[in-house]
Length: 312
Image (cartoon, rainbow, N blue to C red):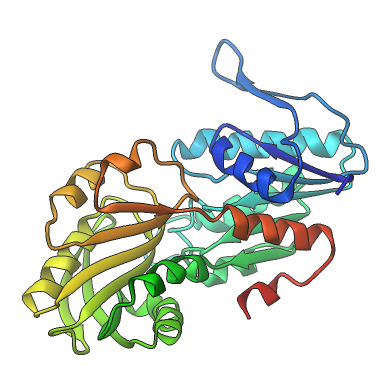
């Protein structure tokens, strides 16, 4: 591993350290700070010429700062003659606008893909994209990981019976089916009507949940409004217990407060793709690390081995 270099910006240095611990390499030295007027200043403090470089930076809140840090770090590494630059983006921000679903709106996921490529990224490693078609927005190789294996291990240890996996919408059926297959559970779908970008109203439950242990699965949780609405609807329909497994815990606004107050939700399982301070204070919130999953993918990319075999 003498030709590998792992860098981190300010978005999630703890995850970067855990990945380096798994890889048994030292986190490379880089300065990422600010000029007096707020512009991002980057300086690489070691030689990267000819090295296989991995930059770990989820584009989580503060999204614009973290994205700009990533772009500037990539540019600095390119100009320092790195052999290959892989942007490791556990949480890919600006992904919710992935198509023109109404007039006069942007496609920000494509814009960010173009920015990363123009900055000098040779490869992307990400996890649980909001929409699978975002992979096609890149003209460089992209490895798409899934947190399902890591989260399922936790549920298997609980040894729950009469399980039903719930997809919060039609678009999440593929993810829900992956959970249901591995947990030997049945599948149900929530029929929702979106009132605003941050709020949705549950209309119907397609499937049987009465007397069942329910797991709601999704790729991200932002304000938590949709999840709380789903939990209340499932409880009214007679669900025995309700848990949620959501990869990216954005948890903006009053989301954590809403989850703490929701007594019908047994627990919310998220990954550490996004940093969350003081999560141990919140009894319903459990954080599962994806450092080993990302670390193994990085090792396989470096050794030119198959990444897809991680999902076998």
